[in-house]
Amino acid sequence: MSNLCGIDFGTSNSTIGILKDDKAKLVNLEGLSKTIPSAIFYEEDDNLTVYGRNALNYYRENYNGRLLRSLKSILGTSLNNEKTFIRDTRIPFTDIIQDFFMHIKQQAEHIEQTNLDYAVIGRPINFVDGDDIKNKLAQDTLERIARNAGFKDIAFQYEPIAASLKYEQSLTNEELVLIIDIGGGTTDISVINLSPKFTNIKDRNKHCLANHGVHIGGTDFDKHLNLQSIMPLLGYNQSIGNNMIMPRHLYHDMSTWHRINNIYTPEFKRSIMQFKKSLDPIYYNRVLDVIEDKLASSICFTVEESKIELSTDISVNKDLSFIEHSLNVDITQDDLSKAINNDLQHIGITIDECLSQAQITRDDINSIFLTGGSSQMALIKQYVNSLFPNTKIDNSDSLSSVGTGLVLDAINKYK
Image 1 (cartoon, rainbow, N blue to C red):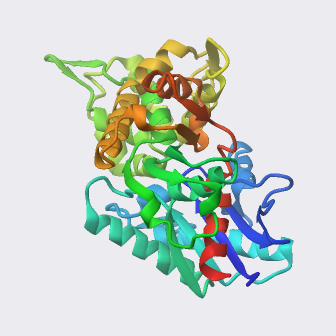
Image 2: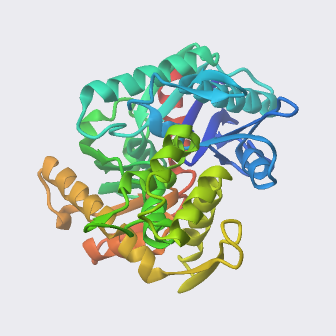
């Protein structure tokens, strides 16, 4: 059955892969790239809808419209059934995700000249930490979206299990493997027995010892670096007198992709304006300009670029003149380390909890497959290595392993 596919719908990036020439193949959705940013731009003047890198470029080139990113993060949350304004019309967030699904499906079908009817879709261990009801809501919502996008049959697979199927192809012997998948929105952990002898076995449940996950990923790293380095220039943690500081939740919304549009409402502006007399005028004027000129997304782009650059550079200097003339900021590796330290500790706890569920210790692990876009960060690699100093760690195929593994799983299920 050639009309099968595997879809890795990620918080930051997505892939779709197919069976071609009896092999799992990721489709080049944008030029030569197998990944597409999970982003949509609804342009208003000409009523255009653009996706992926084009969506990001439209925003950066100041087209009139609305950019949406990190849409996966709304699944299972209070935003799951809410609507947002697109071209003066209230549209359900789920319809926006459906637009994206339809785009990548149609794009893949056009490029590969085939119809795609059967899909295995990746999902995190937890869409929402510790809430089975919300996790079911999230998966049910995603299944409904995929059906509405045109898929006839849909199955789901945990993302780290999918990654393990790709990693298994590189092994020559049986190994007890720890899969650590750190993506844009979640960190997902699996302990699984892998072997080249197992590749044709359809049901791999008996090989999997434990799965665990936590809602921490690259967008959290961005948010916390933003709060550490740029939001203080807008009044974050600044005094408003009487031993009080500016309300932190205001700046958390400004630093979170899927909540940014909340700050452009009259209500949010009023919540800032009440501090006109108590907040230092420098900070007050800056934060008000960010709201009135809708600059929060530009700040988030700047932070994301800084995070990436700090994997190789000790420090970066970022131009913030779009906020205030001549304003700039130095951001260092130490700033990034401090910003994500709590996130790393939570990831470490999640790893140990997964090992405990599997009733094994760190020393029992033969190898580690570290995957997901955020796993490319130097600090992530250093941290995992500190937990497992004597264990082989493979960080290859970090952007494509889940997507390829989902195709392999689809082949097992549908062929």
